[in-house]
Amino acid sequence: MRFKTIEHTKCDVLIIGGGGAGLRAAIAAAESGVDVLMVSKVRIGQATNTILSKAIIAASGWGDAEDSSRVHGADTLQSGRELNDPAIVQYFTDNIRAETQRLQEWGVEFVSDDNQTPMVVKLPGHRYARHIVGKNWQGKNLVLPLKKKAVESGVRFEEGLFVSSLVVANNRICGATCISEQGRFLAVQAKAVILATGGFGHLYMNTNNVPGITGDGQALAATAGVDLQDMEFVQFYPTTLGQRGRRILLYERILVQDGVVLRNGRGENILEKHGYPNPAEITRDQLAQAIMKEILADPEQSGTVAFDLRGLSADNAVELSALLPPDWAAGEGVLQVTPTAHFCMGGVVVDNTGKTSCAGLYAAGEVTAGAHGANRLGGNALAEAIVMGARVGTTAAAATTDPVPAEGFDAATEEELNRLNALFNPQGQKPDDLIEALKKNMWFNAGIIRNQDSLNEALKTINELTKAQVNVTSFTDLLRLLEFRNMGLIGEMVSRSALERTETRGAHFRTDYPVDNNAEWLLNIRISRTDDGLVLKKVRVNQQVAAQG
View 1 (spheres, rainbow, N blue to C red):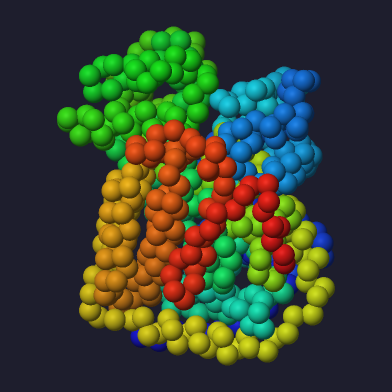
View 2 (spheres, rainbow, N blue to C red):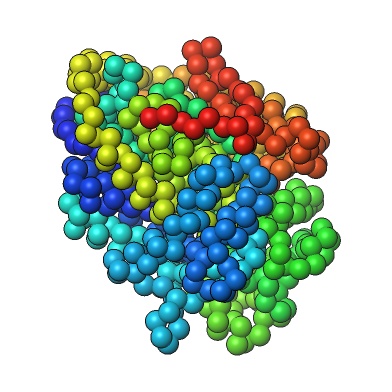
């Protein structure tokens, strides 16, 4: 099968991804006076994790006078178990107040009091109430104004395109190749490329991420020779509806209410059983681990525990109505919940301007490592994405004044076109079947509860799946095969890193090493893709060499 159309285009800055980090980067780059093109495999702004979010942003300066960016940064480092990049943490906590004010100027509305001052709430792990929230607790009230501003700034959009490769010529990134389910091939020549593709939540059987979050940006960077870091740290949100965890129930707001209890299949109070008497202080990793232990120990194997709301007062129920499913009161007031893959702390190694080690390549948001360390605090995802998106957009735009040799671009894109055409094959397993097997493997063997045996089993299964012959007879199959290969690479990186870290820290929990080990493990694990396979190395947190762009 051959591609139906083969096209070429150019831009100054190419942004891969369509969520909050990418849109903020696009606005910053466009305001620097350069030509910006955003490419996304989904609808930009409207099919991403940003719109799925509750639009909660941690930003000191809106609440308690005793709070500050310094305190916010200290809380972030403590939650990250000291594995964060301090320079990135300092930058986003110092600048998020100004960014949220800018968001207001662009039409973002926050839940406010009568004087139109944003309401401030407190989430676990933060010393102060410092969170402002998008109107109606909906991500669309954050991301749609950003999209509107990007359009007004002259940003061009290309939707429904999957980026199959980064084009490397003369030892620098100079563009990317893209394909569609309709058989379109587009080669984009660019002076700078920004990855803003989000995490890899769909590597797991349970996830609340929107479809398509499959680690594409991380895989693209690794294939281009850029190190990844902290891949063992995946945050599982503890309380989501149903057996596959599609919708979050915001435990940080609900579980702290009088009369609300989390119960296992025997009716026991899970928090009391696991030694967490104060629900206002339990972090996401602690609660997810406690719930998963109960799920695995349940003889009925229902895959859920009970969020018991029967003791919730009528007044509190009204106050929380925007966070609860519309029909919850029609039942018995008990909702079945399960943990779900929610956020990825690990990703592409960048410095605090968004530069990677590969000339011409930048990254921002969940695709990167450094901001969150071993565990992310609530509200910090959007704070980091917005601030670092703005900075990386400006950084990349400034780099477009450098001359970029064009030699080699056409040859590299032709080579990629030939590679893709060779993947069509009438034999083997369908990509979707392999993806489902991979997701199940990662959930049970490299998910919330891990140990040496389970991680070795995860790696064995990944190896078997990725060696399978794959049936590709349509362009949709081709896209799914490429996603599967990205997921297989990232799954191996997660499992290898988790096997290497012989301790429990943050979101990484090992039953065979159940406590942290600061004497040996105040280290980041970096991982490189080479011709001989994956190579891991340990890097001391305070001695990291800043990436050079």
